[in-house]
Length: 357
Image (cartoon, rainbow, N blue to C red; front, side, top):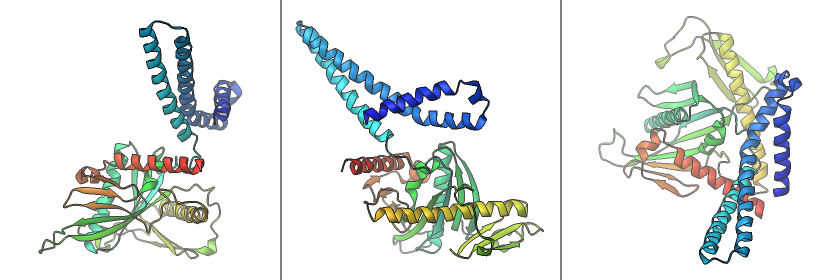
């Protein structure tokens, strides 16, 4: 690994030289590409510098220990050796994590889809709570959100909602949220005080670019235009601005009405269709890999029960890593860092073990 680190450091230094060259500065595309590569390499190079400093400090302390006869100074040298050895171990682990193969989709924006599952109106209410939870989490990260499509129940619930999360690294955090979320509580309409269990399904998809799904044959698509409608089906404008796309091969149906013009809604619907087709291809590739290796955390299996939100005990349990927190209110208000960071660390540990085997 450390031979490779020398190459990484050399490439980083080469980029730092290149981005100061006039011909590169004048070529915006090349300049932006090099700046992105420089940004990706920076944390690795900084960690490697810290590692080399710790190795050098340990060697210096060992050399001083050989030459030192004073008992107090020898003790000080041993303490410095021990401290340097701890830093070496710390930076070695950090470097191994930084050098893990990166998911090429990690820096992309995200399209999230939440659907009420088993439980009727209670499931729809839970889906709406999950939607608000992710909106608050995105706000805490400084990310932007945009609702693409929502089907409300009129009781404050949502049968389904699709929304975009825009921000650097959004997919690298939110990809662990795909799966079945379960809620246990006493519904307001339950007179007997019995605890009911309801579910909602969350899908997290990296936003596709046109290059990912370059050609969608016209014969595979049906386009319908209509007037946009609000709650209860009432028309909210007097022009046929809403667009519904039906993709025959997959059965995917997308309805877009959030923009004022038909052209804008059509563009948004096609962008969402590309994202969903790209996600189907990602799932196909993941299934092929899972036949050869153990499934990793965050594979995005929508049928997997991943988390339970228990209201009577104010408890949230993530079943993949056996993590239980007793702060349900905070979690539902968007405080997901402790859960998502634990999932990221568990995923990294699993990848390290896989590399070592």
